[in-house]
Image (cartoon, rainbow, N blue to C red; front, side, top):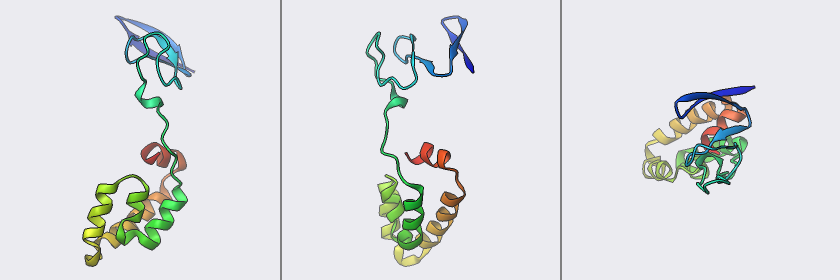
Length: 115
């Protein structure tokens, strides 16, 4: 499948496994960490540690009121908010809702959002 993208005033088709460099607009592979032509780092190709959706669900179920799932998913700021307000049981309710969202979310959507 080809992707049609604007390039310097014209339309040039590129293959699905290629993209334009963010620095010099050369055609490069989508997984390239940097451009071989100009050396510009390609932001989206930096791989993050993949988080397990199952672990996030279990943490939200058992320790969600304390924000453990937020810390696990790299959202430490929200984790601290959950810790500060755990005594109100509002974070526990929010964690239960998030548990349902994680369970309903597909693997690809989960990994796109949380890594």
